[in-house]
Length: 75
Image (tube, rainbow, N blue to C red; front, side, top):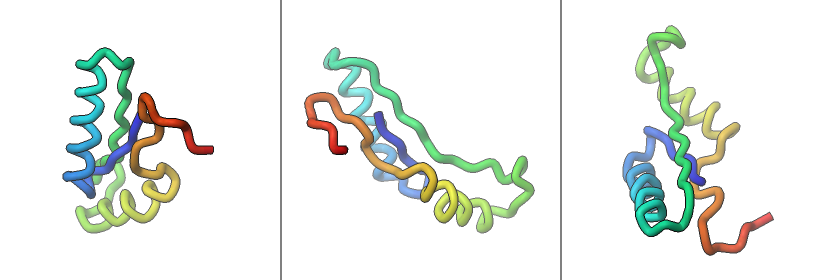
């Protein structure tokens, strides 16, 4: 289980790749959540929207690998 953001494309690409490999190797279900934006619905411009994703959403929903098969969970 992992969470990525549109603001860090290389990291997001790596997260999705690892999730697909996990699935193909039969190690269980992979779930990837992507923090994205919707400037039309939010009524913001591009700069305000990306700032919101980075400074608001990123604090509430931490980005990174949350649970990795075969690794001990950190409390």
